[in-house]
Image (cartoon, rainbow, N blue to C red; front, side, top):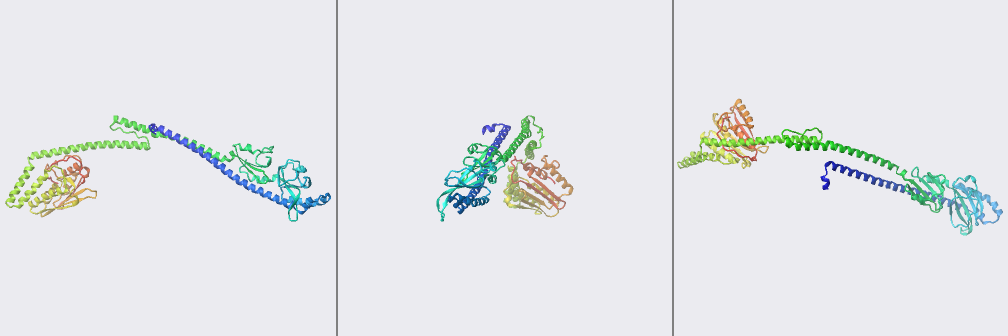
Length: 594
């Protein structure tokens, strides 16, 4: 098996085809032999059944003859005829005896003559054809003579086949008891009347059916025989393989019934099937040759071309592609290979783009650090100072100052937290701290409501997403409104399994011009571009928040804005629950305008 696997594909195919042809040839030879044996067995069985029927007819015929024997030779006339030794009396009785013989001949047309012999074997009465010679006497039972070769009384019957049936005649008393041997009765029978019986036993046109006596003389025959053949030796024919020979011995007479069936005639239909199988085998071989040609030209050769292209691609590279000239599976494979190379080129460009984005994120981080150094603000010093202010406020029992100082301290502490990703709960708490400051500053004029799904509170998200959006809603929406205002924040799970956060205010809103300008910038910021808003110079606003989300979440993040003048603005952001494995950028800046 290992050696077979090491062979080339074309040699494996040729080996399998030769093996398949050998199997077909072996199957054909074996099936032909089995079919011939089945046919011969069925024919043999059929001939045996026919021979049994012929035997029954012959036995029935002989029984009828024996019945005629009893009726004729044991009649009172024949008994008296044999019992007298007076020649004159026999002459007077001869006419009556001949009349009875004539009546007996009319019972069976096979009977050509009847003879009566005395106990010494001398003929004393006769009718029809028969031998004129005396016969050996006495006989003990009914005897069948076989084919007669002795001269006949009627020379016109010399060309016909005859045999004789002889029976002993005994003297019977009134009680039908045997009192002595009286003579012999003989029927001369015409053997040609066996022809219809033998003809019914023929199976094929050229088959032969023969009836031979104990001396192998042919009594009757049906079928082609040499005209001068008078005897038949069964032993010689049984050794011939060209014939199927069957023999049956008839009871009483001891004759043999023989059937000779030529095998070529019996298997003639099988030869037709054999020729058909040979033609089929030749056609299959031709088709297999065509298959080999197609396999080589349409499969093996294209595969080799494909392999050569794959080997040379490392040297050519670039935009080289496989030339697809085949419209079959190999062509599909070549097209898929070209598509795969196109995908590899696209993925390579995407990797380069991702690396550029990572570089951009790192650059943004450095820009944030530079901005922090420029502001020369130390967050730790700031929220420690706020803690001191809170402590003094508590000493002087000014709770509002203490609360505001605590909220500012918490916000600064949250801002300088090392990780860029926090839980949703932490981001909501940061918004709550901002809400306390807003409510104190505007004396309850503005209200911030938060509605969250508790199942999402432990999920992680990018830090400092919500507070800048809420700050935009307060300063660019609610402050331009007369009277009270409200910002509603809702955190939920989207139908796609992402985290969705909606920030909705009932403030001033935007006119169509500013709304159209903002949405167009959103589409532009979805592609690679500057991180900071170069138009306003005021730091991180909605556009840069969207840009940050795209940098960290990729295409899984989205931001949508709806706004109408004097009715308010709604910002909806969505992002995946699973945080991408990216290097985090840090720092936040103040809001910009819509």
